[in-house]
Image 1 (cartoon, rainbow, N blue to C red):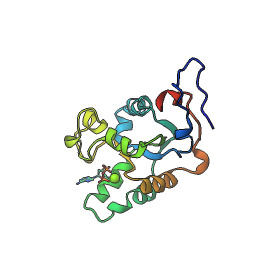
Image 2 (image 1 turned 45 degrees about the vertical axis):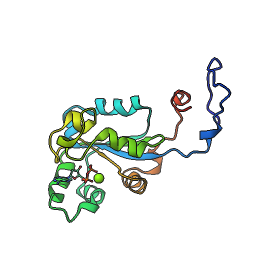
Image 3 (image 1 turned 120 degrees about the vertical axis):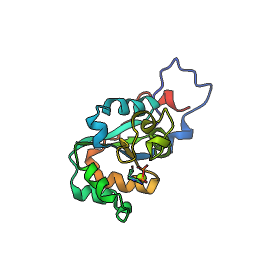
Image 4 (image 1 turned 120 degrees about the horizontal axis):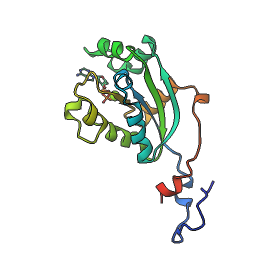
Length: 172
Ligand code: DAT
Ligand code: MG
């Protein structure tokens, strides 16, 4: 479907067919209990909205131990696993799915390095955190993990497909 563009917008003869066929990428992001408790939910959502990504799923969850363990299954053998799981279930977490071109890698950049002391200023961890065990936010690291995590955290009917009217101003 060709996005509607206000008539006064001069497209210079360039049509939208270049991105019509692209299927939009989705990623799973979660504001961990420290981010929720510290009142950073609005600030963090604002950053992804302002960047130009679209929210397609959102829920506040009191995470079960089982879900936390499945989510971090790849880290099961690591020495920090038990503390990590206990932290994730220690308070409400905001589970989100965001959509947009390149959103998986871009969100990881916006989140910053795993250890907040190595995270660049301007990134979420670089701006708001000091400790690896309290690093505010999770983001899927690749297309396969994004897909796996989205289906682990959300039912299909909890995700809303919609097209922002701002899209014509975001992608040329
Ligand atoms: P990321 O969250 O940047 O994808 P990861 O997947 O390597 O990082 O690890 C998952 C989480 O586990 C991370 O956000 C914080 C915790 N963690 C990782 N390495 C750790 C360590 N060495 N000590 C304590 N916690 C750690
Ligand atoms: Mg990871």
